[in-house]
Amino acid sequence: MKKRIFIPLFWKFTFAIILTVSVFGFINLYFLSTFVTNLFAKELSNQTLIMTKTIADRSIEPILYNDLASLNKIVSEVVQNDKNVAYLFILDSKNNVLAHTFEHQVPLELISLKYDSNYNIIKLKFQNDEASIIKDISYPIIEGSIGKIRIGIYNNAYTKTINVAKSFFLSLVVLFLIVGIIGALIFSYIITKPINLLSQIAKNLNLKNLNRVPLENSKNLFYIKVNKNLNVRDEIDDLYLTFDNMINRLQKAYEEIQIAQKSLMQSEKIAAIGTLSAGLAHEINNPIAGIKNCMRRLSEDPENLKQNITYLEMMQEAVLKIEKVVGNLLNFTRIPKMEFYDFNLIAVIENVLLLTSFQLEKSRITVIKNYDIGKNKCFGSQNHIEQVILNLLLNSIDAINEKKMEDSNFNGQINIHLFLQDSSMVLELKDNGIGIESSKLKSIFDPFFTQKKVKQGTGLGLSVSFNIIKEHGGKIEGKINETEGMTFSIFLPLK
Image 1 (cartoon, helix red, strand yellow):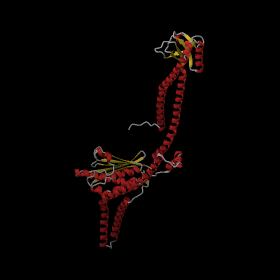
Image 2 (tube, one colour):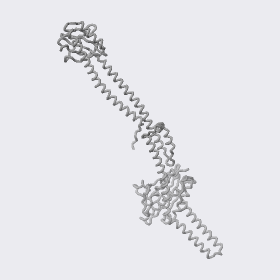
Image 3 (cartoon, one colour):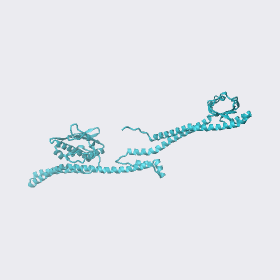
Image 4 (cartoon, one colour):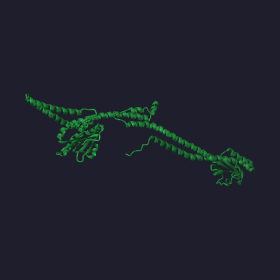
């Protein structure tokens, strides 16, 4: 699976806020730079034309009467009353200057400006001042029959206003970004703090001991306490409640699984006892037959003291053998707790071989033992490990018997090898039975998987064994031999 890049929620919120505010800001800035600017310029031009028309109406009479003093008074008042007016001059029908606001004279380049219509708006650099952009407006007096008005308006007046508006708007965008990032930090903390805490609890969750203390402590978070005091709840509170219910269900389910697993182990033991019953009857019947024979001899010649002592010793030996077989059976069938302690693994193997001796002898299977561990002891639950070894040994016996169904002269063999590897004790059981197909090897530890043909199997033996070894912190592996049969390896930790 491809490794995914981790991006904290804070950076996702921040990126979303920056993107949203930036797009919104640029759209509005574009709107301000185009539509609003054009609207403002058009409105200013309309006002200027209205003002120019008013001046033209007032100038008609002074021009007709050649009252230059009144004309100069009119242009002076306009410039004094409106600071946006850069200049104003009046021309007669022959382009002679009648009145103006310049200190000396009207520049010739202004007088000679050409217009496409009776009036037009153009841009000029006034008096070599690059900062002063002038809009020159020409307005005819009585359709130009007696003259025209020329007025220059400072363009930077409304440009400055637009720039101030743009700067203010950009400041608002930056402010929104800062507030948004701070908000992203706060909200990401409010959201991620509880989630991270739940994630940490989930990672450290121990099914054997579901510790609820961390979850209880998480309820002391500031955000949780505020919601509780305000008597409100939200999705995070629902998440905590759901997580709390999940822990309860998980604890209940785990307890049920533990009970079911113990019942499953015991069921598999009972199934194994059914397999061993013929051998156990044989192990008990033989000593009983010997006891009966000794009792008959004692009754025939009760006065023969030497003979009686011999028969009594034989009877005692038979009783001890029965006691040992029954004791081993009782120890195997009881329901023990999984208590870990040091035990001798060789003694456990020998006990399992004793329980299965009849099956091994009946199937003519040779057992080759190789114990290469010295006096090292294994650490775990002895009774459960005994069940695992019995399951594996019975599987090997069944596999060899299935092979014998194909070849009656086949000689079965089981190799038991016990050795140390690193910090583990390794037990290998290798048989030359019928084996398994390589495609089904990965399923051998699945519950209810079985391929037994000699007798119906439960399909639980290897699954139960797998769980027992897992509880011991070890592992169990199965592999197909190069020639025939299978090998099962059990790795158990040393103390």
